Amino acid sequence: EAPGLKKDAVVPVLVDLGRNTLAAEEKYMLGAVDRIMADRQFRYQDQLDSRMETLDTFLEGLTLGSEEPLNSQVVFNEMRELIRTRFELTQNEIKELIEGPSIELEEKLRDQVESQLKDLEIKRLIGGVERLLGAPLEGEQIQAEGSSWESVTEWIFKKIEEQFANRHKAYFDDLEDSHVTKSIEAGLKEVQTAELTDSILVKILGLMAEGRKAAFDKKSHKRIWLRTQRLRYTFYAAGLLMGMDQESAQNDILDHLENAQLVVQEAWGLNEITRLKEVQLSQLEEKLREIIQEEIGEDVYNKHSHQNLETLPEDLKEKVQDLLGRSVVSNISRDLFLRVISELWVEYLTQMEALRVAIGLEAYAQRDPLVQYKTRGFEMFQNLMEDMRVGVVNRIFTFQPRNLDRIQAGFEESPSVLKAD
Image (cartoon, rainbow, N blue to C red; front, side):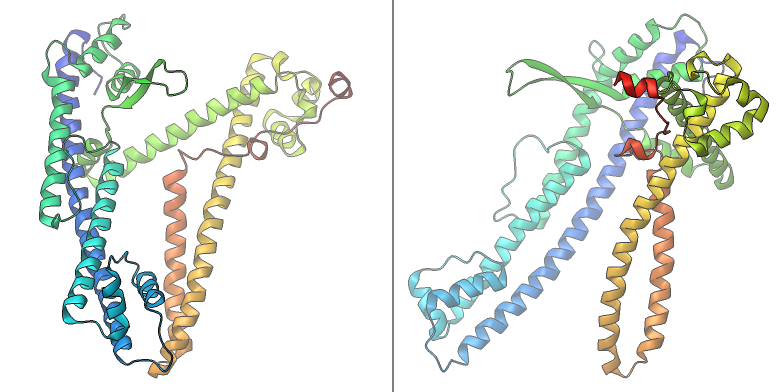
């Protein structure tokens, strides 16, 4: 916290904060990767069982024979497509398929199903881990082919621990070239006071979190600088929240989000008053004019209705700017609500159609289809409402509207403006 924190004593405090932040991220990543690997192994086993069952059924069908002569290559291609495996057999083994595969050939097919599916799932696992980390697992790569789940798991954890160890060293341990310490010192150079405010600390925390690295542009063949993310405070902040009283944490978060919404509103208001500086009050869209008139009073509105927004008295200009920002934020929220509701509603209708088909099948099991449909349909609707609330909350402060015309204030162009165009 800022109160009482002095400029000459802040460096070790912020460095310690950075260390804790990186340690919290590492702890979270290791836990998340462990869950990903468990889920991937479960999916692998589920798919393996399904493909093996399909293979057994296919081979059993071949032993029953056929009234018409079978083309061995056609049968082989059908098997590859059905099992979704790139089988590799000799021509003699392909011919053996339609004559009745031997035990050795069946074992070979099963081994290829298992090895190829495992290779695919391990590659997907590594790709998922790299997306989670936001960086590739550098160093000596593991060969998916022939690797066991245990060896892959050990390799992934080893690479993650090495990656975080290297980050710890580069950010904090190198006393002469510590990236984070240099960023802190660079931010403090601009501070003129001995005591640090919240805004100064927030700025320095931002400098600590971001870095840059050199790269070469493939088109221009010139060196460029890319922005990188050093620290992510989310995981450390989550740990601090877990240690707080629940009610106190909820109030603090709500206050923060409400203040953030006011800041967003002020930013949009400034943007709008700048964009519409040559527009008169009377030219704004009707709904917005009514809101402004109600806020400032009819007499004041009539007095200034034919003035450009730029020339309005300062106190009135601030009120109009606030109302413009409030209007844009309201339109953004409306646009977000519609986007989230539309996406989830389409998904809900698809699920309801699938439920209708499933309930029809359950009717054969002597269950009352109407009761089942109503019960599960009600549960799905409750889930839909919860998903809508969570979706809006998750995106309300990060949502970027695609069509600005739908959220910005509209206005009627005067004849002089039309003529100039």
